[in-house]
Length: 490
Image (cartoon, rainbow, N blue to C red; front, top):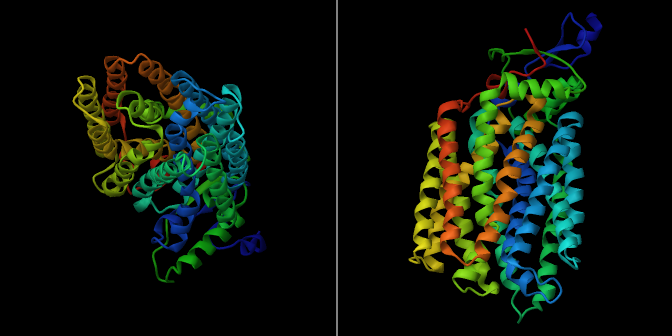
């Protein structure tokens, strides 16, 4: 026994009961200062949201070209159906890959989901009718949905507690960097002076595949989550990774420094689905209510409006489809600046206050702008300014939904929890929203579109009330303090 103990690396100690380890790894990860290592991890993982922003923006900005295509000849309803197919794929991909993420680890899923995305988005360029386009968009969404679960889990588990809120919001907000890239790409590729628009929209989908290839190389050096490894029977590997991170940060504890808190963990190979259900809908029922409310409201709010904004500009304001991209840029700027400017407040003022504030302000502003749209006061420019202001608050609100579901549940069910709430929220709010708005826009009635906006507003206000009443103050706390691991032992 003595020899066995001596062979163990620092940070892991054997205890009497077989299969149980005592470790200070969570405390060591949370005690680190921000470093180049964390910046590289965020860059390599956060680029997924850039890809998603690119995909979503292309789908919206290319809507006019898809309607004018001599091959596809899409209607507004067809655009809504294709959009819903993308979101449906994201829902099913999140659930399937989320289950795998908790079972086989975060890092392996990085490459599986990215491969699915790369293949599908490139295939979209060869679509020949609505069915083929919808199938390829479905598969693209499945890859992106799977990325959400693995990446949100890893970011939470590698970033020190005091930076977790602002980091998560900025990473999710980077979606709008992709949106800007997609907007500029659409401007160029839909210009008939540059390329035939029928070829331009096809070339546009190769941009995402090209960026995805870059991501593959960036992710080769990202480590597996040490927290996941500790519970899944690989403590020595977990300690080695943390030691490498500490070396990269150039941070070593002094010999006379007070010891970090330790915890005992019972190692396991997987978490049964029965235990997952009991944890989410029994032990943490109120947290599940908050996560479901936040995800559903933001999914409807965002997807219904953003996937169909190009149709609003073309059908109600007469903006040519090749000019739609110019209106995305200020819209994307507001969405990115929101998390950057308001993000630190989620770590200082706190989660509950900021979530309630951003959701309620977003809902109220949407109702006001929807009314102004319905009575014809807004033109294309003022409508874009209104959206820019609304989503300055809505963007950190939506990002906070992902932050909430990824930090308030135990490690063993974290990825699947993200997947389930993303899937339910997107399934209810996101898949229905674009199709509903496509139908409302097809009526040509501003009052019908206002009804859709008011529904989104009500959902956001209801989510704000639920978050204020049942949310928890998770700011600057270790993940293990926010939600005790199921494997934890006294």
